[in-house]
Image (cartoon, rainbow, N blue to C red; front, side):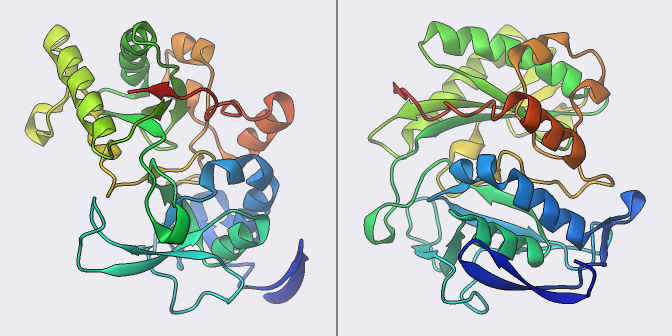
Length: 302
């Protein structure tokens, strides 16, 4: 791809790709063509974690230093072949806004979003059901967010504590970096109530805060977060989304929200130990495949 506007065949769709030389990560000289190439190559392992989930795009048309905007409704400009779900906003679908969320289930749609400079892709912990209904959550998530001067190293220690509790309750926990400062844990679950995962995660977070008040925080009190790890259970609210596995992040470098092993979590002693850029992630995929490949198998009932 050398021209600023080219037409490419991506599987069964012809896509017009534009502004390919635009620099989106200035500190890394990482251009839109590099973003598209990354998502094209990561697509086969990324798509199962996006499929049937109502995506929110965070677009950076002028690069990571040039401002951004959230896009939930793509109806204004999406081609006819791009699948969407018509969803009413709010946790229970009772809000005021109606959005046509893109459903990124196939590679052409993923490349289409990359061409929009949608560097970050965020999805909920539930899938879209028949006639654009909302299924109950199939994932439980903890978003571990360090308050300065704490780092992802402290998040790893918190993750180990969380894993002990979750394992004792019969859940399997899968770690991934946020691609920014923190760490996230996912557990496959089965429930018949949309609010159950949020309530369950809050119970666990409050329990850990009580046991480790000097290191962990479960309440959303920014003034108390210095040096502690915030156990953000609220990401389980059906109205909220979390950055998708393998999504780029809008940092100075093209870092990625990267699945990691528990051995890597235990061994982490410096923030750089769990910081991965797009090239490193592609190498990891070639070497290890998708560390989340069995994430949705055998969900645990809540």
